[in-house]
Image 1 (cartoon, rainbow, N blue to C red):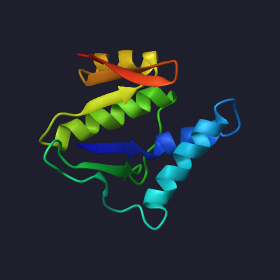
Image 2 (image 1 turned 180 degrees about the horizontal axis):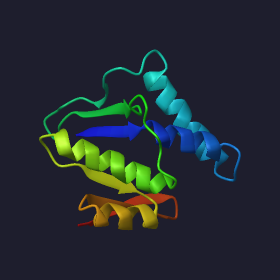
Image 3 (image 1 turned 90 degrees about the vertical axis):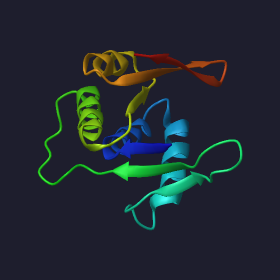
Image 4 (image 1 turned 60 degrees about the vertical axis):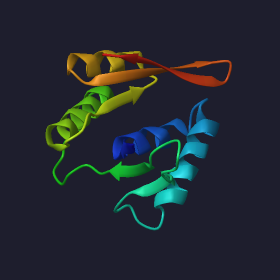
Length: 128
């Protein structure tokens, strides 16, 4: 599995550092910086393939030169995922906590997974 994090997500987390979600945003940014601080090119392995599961990697996706972001961040994220789908040979899954983004991903015919948080536990309800 490859987890791709668009740079827009990093920008949104940077903005959250000034809100009530600042602790989680800082923790997430710190973890990502620990993986990519030395360079953003290429993938980083989060979990090696073993007898019970496959390799899991993470990769940052920068905006291409000249990219103009859409007015709504959700629309831009869905657009980036749809673009990835157009040239990857395997399915693209759109994962979000955001209901609006999940609806937009479904409308773009992306397989989406809306995460839910209950009592500190995170779960997924696959859609599409």
